[in-house]
Length: 219
Image (tube, rainbow, N blue to C red):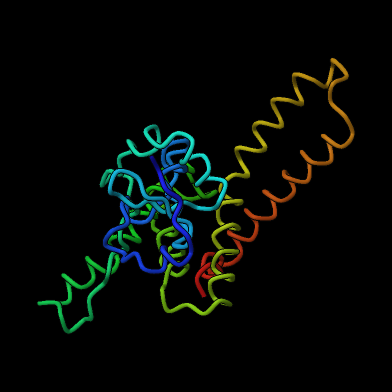
């Protein structure tokens, strides 16, 4: 039979005796979620000690101990330890340091670039990728202050928004052709569509007349 341990008993239980690395068996079983249990809400069952999230989850365990105690915590379920970049002096050469330091950031940038299918107006896919990498590396610099984090997050959002303009214009233009005669196109649709057209024209003009247009994203 399961036994709910008192606060006094719980305080005497060493961490080594608690199974499932201290995660709540009820949350694991019902939701497959890793939720740390409360070290003062323990239940003993079959020579094992489980820590539950709260009194309610312990009550559920007490009613069906066999059901919840059979849960298994696999290595795949555990959160991955964050990658630690070594001190520069620990590396054999600069290339090894740069690969380790920039590798994860570049990988994430490539995933984000692929997921969003970005292509900046007037640029090729390759040129877009290079510009985006530069912004992404600026935004992911671990030495950034909160101000710089917020600044480059805005720059990334602005870059993505510019990339999406042609897609939005094409989509809304298609809707306009299909719905205008059927009276399904309203004044506010027109306002939105032409505002995006004006925004795109202004962007092209700025790119053409300003050699430092892209510099604003990383300065």
